[in-house]
Every structure is written in C-alpha cells, then in structure tokens.
Image (tube, rainbow, N blue to C red; front, side, top):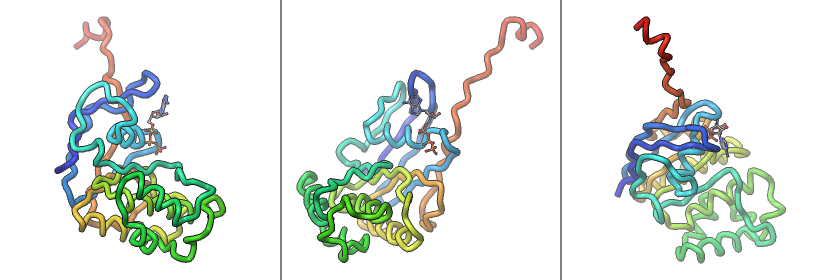
Length: 204
Ligand SMILES: Nc1ncnc2c1ncn2[C@@H]1O[C@H](COP(=O)(O)OP(=O)(O)OP(=O)(O)O)[C@@H](O)[C@H]1O
C-alpha cells in the first residue's frame, strides 16, 4: 500500500503555508523533502502524521502505518537505552530490540540511562526506536541533527534496510544522506496569488 498525498493545503496560525501538494510514496521507496527554512517541510510531515489538520486535500495510507520522528527525541531519561527500546516495543506490540541496538551502534550503551547520553547518542536512540515500532512508513523530520558522519551512515543503512524490507520513508533534511535511491520533492514557499485591483484591471 502506498502513501498518497493529494492536493493538500495547510495553514499555520491562520496563514496558508502549503497549497496543492501532491505525491505518492510506494513501498520500498524513500522521498526526501527539500526546501528553504520556513517553506513548510515540518508542516507537511506533521500533516501526513495526522498531527496537523489540513484545510483541503487528502492523505491516504497513513494513520497507524506511520512512525513519526520529530526534532525532540522523546526519550525516557530515567530508563536505560534497552529499557527505552523495550518500552516502545511494548507500546507498538512489536520487537526488533536487538536489530535496533545493532543498527544504531548502541550495544555499548545498553545499560546507560538515556538522560546521561550525549546529544548524538540520544539521537541514535531516538531513531533506533523507529525499528521497534514495526511500522512501515517512517516520517522523519531532520533525522540527522547532532549526528556525526559515521552515525549518518548508520542511519542511511537503517533506512535502506527498512526499504528493502518493504517499508518506505518520507524525510525532511538539509543534508545529503547518501541515499542515492531516494527521490526528491521540492517544497516551495507558499506564494499568495497576486491580487489584481480594479484600477489595474483597467490596463489589462
Ligand atoms: N504555530 C505556528 N503558528 C504560525 N505560523 C507557524 C507555526 N508553525 C510554523 N509556522 C510557520 O509556518 C511556516 C512553515 O514552517 P515549517 O516549520 O513547516 O517550515 P520548514 O520548511 O520545516 O522550516 P525549517 O527548514 O526551518 O525547519 C513558517 O513560515 C513558520 O513560521
């Protein structure tokens, strides 16, 4: 089943941000959202994840198929790395804890409290959580913030495994992930149609 976005329009704080957005994301594929700051990438991801209402258009194939990872890592500071993954695996009634630990190089940190991790280590754990959700559509907002080059490569490899397993990924990022197989979708800043005044119309 593919994720399909059709003619989507979204406002934030009463101001139009996105209009006429459409794409489809089949199983096994990744789509990278590009666009300048403020163009609406986060807004689009939040709408796809069901966290932001649209005022027009349609999102199909999302809902409970989505695993959403935003800027905040959302970790339980007083649980260990393994306990965090176990917690989320139970919430999503899935497993994959060992795959998550191995995939994000977290074995050496398994017993550490999440609250004591460095920013990049927290990010790795936050992303490892995707694996234990078992959900097919990963929706990721700037997933590589705080990651060093080696961790970006781990992340790209995890996405690739997810795609090979029949999953898909929608990713907003400003950096090159090295995912050559990903398609690019440009989110262009919303521009209101220029209004033509009655006076101007006289000259048209
Ligand atoms: N709660 C809000 N109220 C009003 N405007 C908002 C709100 N949240 C976001 N916006 C505006 O919506 C527009 C799109 O924001 P969004 O965060 O989706 O952009 P982005 O492409 O993800 O940006 P960046 O690359 O900086 O992360 C921006 O102009 C932003 O200021």
